[in-house]
Image (spheres, rainbow, N blue to C red):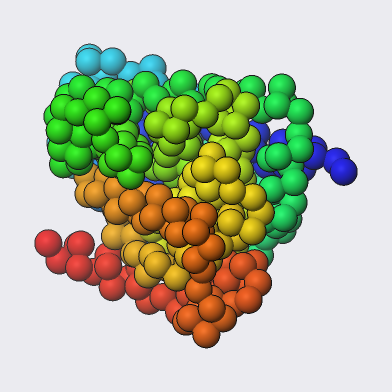
Length: 421
């Protein structure tokens, strides 16, 4: 059996990112437009999809102490570098933060909602000295599909959207993922230590200072790991990373399937469980691969952006599977855990990236530990339980259908509520 497609999926979908990936994707497009223009824009116009706007309104932009697309755009105009990808703002410093605040306050940045069915769409027009530069990103956070200077098209890559419900990007299934995670040479998984190290750093930062809602710090309450239950430790350690990230920490994270919070929620619960349970290096790496790939598999069905919370609907399900493995479970118990999670938290919505994301992460991971423990006891729903099917793969597709079809108007309703405030 060839394991290459699983390794490819891991390497393609796990990437470092500085800041929330929606405003950072906008910053990437802005940086590319500014570089194409060749100077600081006199004004910038943005057209973005509903999901991008929703996920960027309330989240901190690293180092600035501010939230939203205006400051992300301004900082990218003065200090962004498109060659850094999702770390486009990593070269910015205190002087740049001040310049960006002044630039944003000047009123030269205009943000508008794009009338598009695409979940992920960013269009930037930058103007200076009678010239106009355009950059468009579609379907994936780093997928630049169009670059133009005045009338000259410099780059064009026709977008090929994979609709939610299609897993053609990574044609995986849980059985194959399990075979890979348990059968691949563990040396092939050592690159996952980079994921663990980067995300562990921001988790420790979140536990050491008051960020956002302080979910992680409050749940920890100064206790050592040995004094905490498995659920408490998993939830506190992981949500602390989200506390720091959503508040604008300048530390990067390893994202999964286009989301930093998904990367945190797919990786750190497994690390926490391995520590708490005293698991060795090899079981931790195999559980990490299992969690990451199930997250990627579910997101391939749901899409990069969704009305459903990706941390709850994808990465916490992956984490539940990884925790089952660390508890000594096999394929049957992992399938039970997936079914349990879909039965439990399938309706948790995404109402934008913000400080309370840490609270949703804590809630979904408490469910992940509970569902893993139930799976180990042989508890799982019957086929008559709502959207659950006999085959967990069908349950996953039902979950995707719920998000992409059943909740089709949800993003617009949520955005209207957010704008009304």
